[in-house]
Length: 183
Image 1: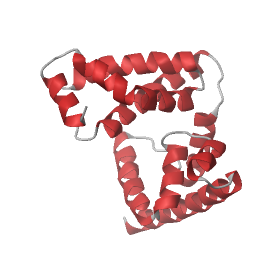
Image 2 (image 1 turned 135 degrees about the vertical axis):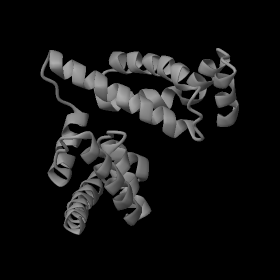
Image 3 (image 1 turned 30 degrees about the vertical axis):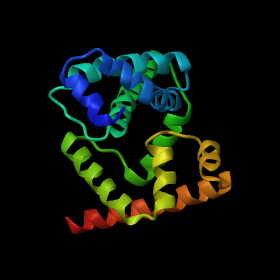
């Protein structure tokens, strides 16, 4: 079923919309949640929350690309769940490591306006990258994949992934420093 057909089902308030979404994007969303949370049970809970969140958001939302829409929603749900888990107990895993890696290049934003500026700057930065470094960067810092998963998916070595990420983080830091100087 095409994305436009699924969105139309949501707008018609048909329960078939959730079933079609689960069939087409359930596995994709589960992988994102599992990569962030490191737990199949927590990931499953987030995916279940996703369908309710989407049901309540469409309408009025009318996403054009459901993979990006669902990916964004599940990522936010999983990050929220991760913060909740960390508040209950000390946690580790891939997401914390990824966020720590990025913090060195990005720094920490204190307010919502700064976060929006940072997001826009990151979008502009990603446009400057070639396809391979951009994909490695997004797999690591958006989908929270580990280096071995990225290497396997792209047919390169884990060392190549590490090198690309290191170079890209340095470029990002330089890019953001240059943007601050322009303001």
